[in-house]
Structure formats: C-alpha cells, structure tokens
Image 1 (cartoon, rainbow, N blue to C red):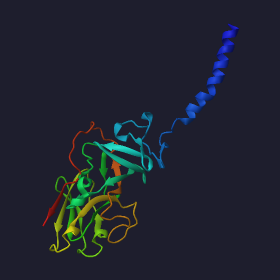
Image 2 (image 1 turned 45 degrees about the vertical axis):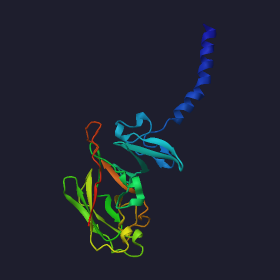
Image 3 (image 1 turned 90 degrees about the vertical axis):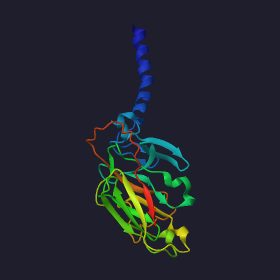
Length: 247
C-alpha cells in the first residue's frame, strides 16, 4: 500500500507541470488571436468560445500569414477585427460592372439572407468607382437605399467615383448603373465597381476614400447581427448584389 501511494504521488508530481502548461495554453474566449487579429466574442476559434456555427472562426494559413475567416452561406470572409460592440469588420468583396478584364472576380457576392447578419446604415456607406454613371442601390424589396453620381469620364477615371449614405439596414440588395453621359472613345472607362464599405474605417474624402480604386477587389465593411436571431442554418443562396448597366 505504501509503495502504491508513493508511486501515485510521483506520477502526480510529474504530470502537474504538463497539466498546468496545457491549461495555460487554452485560449480565453474573447481573447483568442489569429495572426494579428484578436477574435471578439461571441466569435471563437475553439468550439467552447462560440455557441452558434455562425460565429465559428477558422484560422487559415495564407501567403500573408495566418488570417481569421468566417463562412457565410459558402463565402469565406476575412475577419479584420471589431470597432464596436455587436459589430465586426470584414473584407467585403467588390462587384464589377462591364469590366471584361476582371473575369470571374466580379462574380463573387456575399449572401446574408437566412443569417443573423446584416449591413447597418449606421456604420456603412455605399460606394462606386467609375465615371459617367448614376449608381443606385435598392433592397431586394425594391426599396431605395441610396445612390451617387460618378464624375464625367476623363483622365484619372479609374481613380474617380462617388459614395453616399444608405438609408436603411439590409441583407441583400440590387444595384443599378445608369449611363448619365454619351459614351465616347473612352468606352473601356465605363468599367465600374460598386460596394458597401465601413465609413468608420476610412477617412472621408472626395470623391472616394483614399485607397479605393478600380483595381480594389475587397473593402472593409461592418457587419452587425441580431443577437435574438433563432433561424436555422439558412441555406438560401440569394445573391447580395445584382448589377445592371442601362445605356
């Protein structure tokens, strides 16, 4: 009996540092880190740090190091952090209109239908890069949300555009591009993009926040969510954006 008790204490003594090390390495929810991003609660990397699959974060290795992603209806969105409670900052893909050289890049759209997430008018603006068009945004119920007029085409058109406030929250939308001026010899400059971007991330500037141009593929946008949402997995695949060019 004495030998068994002595042996038990030896094993416990040897295991204690290992157990303490394992416990210290366990992430504290709300303080998990992926790359240089701290994951805000209720999101989490470890299963004990999120209660719904919507808030699961995957820490993935990219050519720029580790990056956190959330998956919304099959689209992986890079998580940039959090600016305010109950909001997160994501890399939101830009959609293109009449841009042949963009190929498949312009086909990427985010779908928030059937999820607790939405774009809030309190934190986001609608923007468009290009020239010669009236860019307007509507909810999928055809309610107008806002719009802006791009400058006349000329030198530096790829760096020009417009932005404006949006008038309501939404999960999906339709954008129209209506030509405002006759198309001349610079037809290729009618390539345009449209996007939702976080007004809190950029310093306001005219005609566009610094750093956004026709080659920009993603812009930071603020996502909000309904904490009382009780829907299911949300399998609807309605596109976030549908674009038309009206000449």
